[in-house]
Amino acid sequence: MLTRSELYRLVNDYIEVSGGYLGDFSYRTHEEFYPYYCNLDINPYDYEGTTRERFIKILESSDAITQAKIIEGVLTKYTVSYFPENKREGKQALFNEFQEIIKRLKSNTSVRQGTEGEVKNLIFAANGPKPEIVLADSISNQIQIVKNANFCLVYDLLLPENGLTWETLVEWWAKKNNLAFPNIETEFNLYNRLKQSLESQPEIIVFTTYFKRLRREFGKSFPALIPQVYLHYDQKTIKELQGKQRLERQRMDFLILFSNSVRVVIEVDGQQHYADGDIANSKKYAGMVAADRQLRLVGYELYRFPTPKSSK
Image: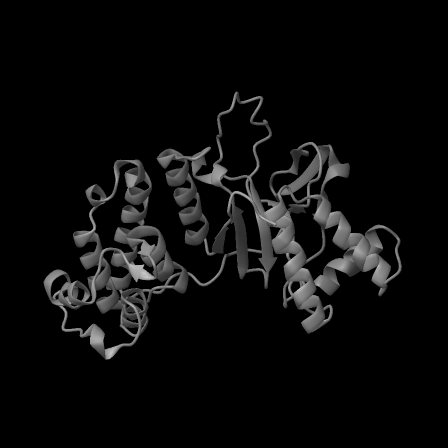
């Protein structure tokens, strides 16, 4: 079956939505789409809402084989050449991804639920120069930060079965720094240290809003929102590489660890992720989509929140 993430990427990223409506579908052409492109007897008028809302409801209520036929219909109706030239590279990456999803749906195999292996090397909240990391023991995957270790945090305990909660993270922080626990001052000491690592106003808004709302509702027993987490690592800086990137994404804006296997990435996107100034850059967008796909294939859930030019 389609995951919710795959469904909404098909709708919002591939077909696209305008004014709450799906692509260039009218109510009439949406009705004609299923028999003409999918060889399916589906009546959208059995569902309420806009064309977008009806399309989502139809996909959600369909079995895997029907979902595959609908996606095939979408890719036939909206070929890559249908889109403006400056979007085609990104659309091609999505087109290829949905071809693989169709194969999976037809074989009736489910997508991997979660990642494999235990959480190790959780390096996060960097607020200064990039840490220099070496493999202290490559056999057991033990790393050592040999420079700039004071500018980042390393969670070095086994992850509890219920994931990394705010309470667990505060307790680790207290022991690491010989602070009182439980103690409200210790809690806000960690809160402020994490906040220092955030690079933009939209990231600060996401972090502070998440903390205030969940802290008020759940006390200290809510999943910690971990900022600026190293996912991939290249020892060379972008400056040393003369502006080139050997790894598409080294740090995640935020990570939530519900357990060893259930990991959620949250990215807060400014225009720099897909444009040069006000001009869309299809190569940047395609690179972002490809990196997202690799994350999802190994079991991460990923959510992107676009931000306006100015966030207050």
